[in-house]
Image 1 (cartoon, rainbow, N blue to C red):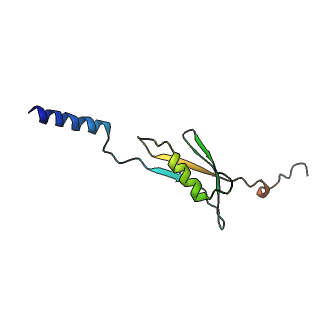
Image 2 (cartoon, rainbow, N blue to C red; image 1 turned 60 degrees about the vertical axis):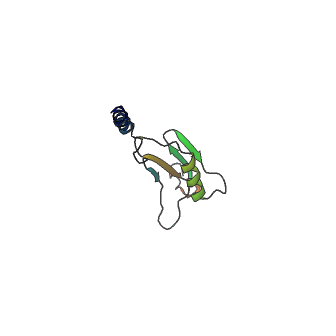
Image 3 (cartoon, one colour; image 1 turned 60 degrees about the horizontal axis):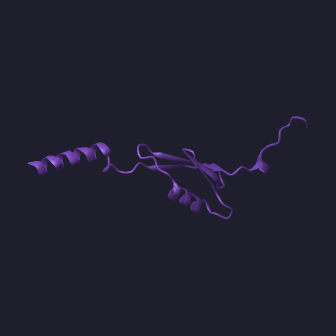
Length: 97
């Protein structure tokens, strides 16, 4: 009788602690550009920040971020990959010209 009681109580505690729940997903948000790849230079998630190193491929960067990421246990973790800024591609302001 005592063993059944302990087993039942342990099952209830495990259920409350959600230890058998599947892990929450990690969602990578990346930007796309028509006709050309849009490479990321920086990633952010809940105060965590990563910078892509020179010569690091996009795939390697995403892998590195995913491996070092501190995941949220209670909700999906969303990582935003910010595109490289192309200052030379930005239109110049017509003011003052």
